[in-house]
Length: 340
Image (cartoon, rainbow, N blue to C red; front, side):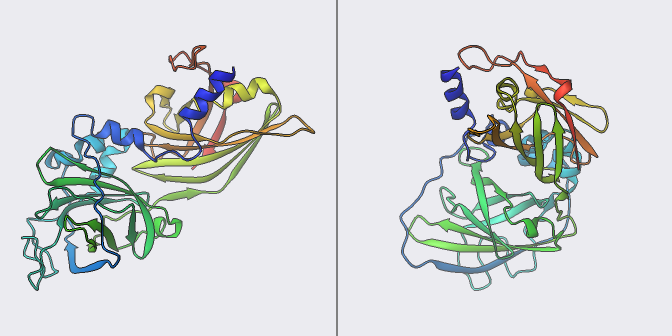
């Protein structure tokens, strides 16, 4: 079991790169561009231009750039598609003429054409204005709060159009249901300078996450506390803190494999879910022998409008070498219902 345990820790590190699975699946037929970091001057040069995006929506069929991402959301794809904001033919209220220059004629590094925001995720398309590659800093400021850039992907090699995804980290911002967003990104210029670029989104299509109170469940095998429950079309997420009394149950629960069922009666097997998971190292009590650890889940294709998730731990699924083989079975006797 020692090698198996080490394999699991490698597969489920404490702080994984968020939504790696999302990126790989969503752009499996597109080129993943390596983010190039240029050397930059000590003093950042601010860019004064500001885009104002007009409220408007288009269908997924009219936005092929978002089609794969929307498809990955499963049952949530229609709702997410209705929330996409489209900039109509470069006409805006900021003084930009759509050519990549601001009102005073300064060349901007890119223009924004399409945006999605639901309180958990900001997704936007950026069309390069002369740069051979768009390289952004990891931190994206939304209404003054610091959030994390997950990836930048050129849709097709040489197209100059880049899909950018940001995870909203500020909980207050995520729940605001705003009418306006000021988004600032740091762009690494080919000249070696780092510049700030700000665009503003104003729309009634901007969303927010739903949250639920912490929940606690007691069983013969231990206790689980559910916290940080968040739901949006782009992802459903929560954290489980376990206190397990016996080694046998711990061996089942640490694998982060589970079946789940929504309030419509739809059941998902572990390999049906598009998710990012992490599992902390266990802490064992010398006095009681109890085992404590935490698991975090981010799931893309579970119905964000569901009233609950029936969480059913799965047993098995791995061979003796620690490779996933998909032979897990549900442990109905260990299940519990997370209310959203």
